[in-house]
Length: 324
Image: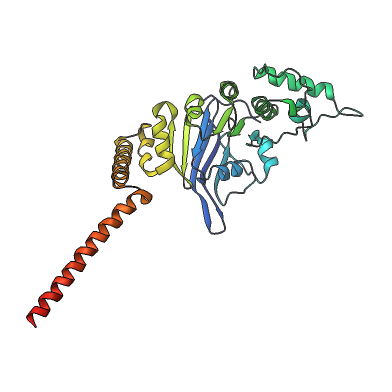
């Protein structure tokens, strides 16, 4: 670890990253940065490459090509242990907590402090309490209660505290508010904001755009493995971010000035017009009768047409016989 960098300067940078799995090219020349004292939201649709990018940062997947920088210096991250040594901690969506262990045991799981003859329980409990207090966590009544007795928000808090405990510089949170209630979501988002305010570089992965806009300083949107936009959160709206996620190309113009341009509005207006046309078409079909209701009327029309055709054929035959 190095001295804390000035706020707003990159702690973690990836430049020109490419990653493929066989014939599938998942990441295409991706540039990504996480700045000190900021929450960087990483957003994108399913399959956009978010999980692969995070696993590349965490050393689970090696980079095919590209450069990895930490505190401005090139580094090589070959495995999760290398990432942890740099101060990069990832809290995955499943939290990786053991229900049968208490809070202290979970926070030090795999990194226990040892005394002369046994584990140094007192030292670990003191460190865990200090970390939770530093994060202003007040919802946990006892550090020795089992994780199985905690609520979803409390579990997420313990997982985040576990990541912060190890003098982290970058904390990556994968869907931290998924499956949480309103009060628990507010609690976790408040914690995320406090992490950034304490000087850490925080990366937030989320599909909830309201959460993203509430706590993020910057938004990096991935679209089909490419960076569609990297903008300040204050310069865009939720519809702009959704447009970046769903179409990618239309939002690229927003990168220059951090604002969604008229193209985004035009696409949105076109989508609204298409929706109106769909409503009209549906109405017309409904007025004509649903397949189960309108079919008899259609059949009657067909029968009438058939009768007319039969009459025409009879008249033609009569005329022909008279002529003969």
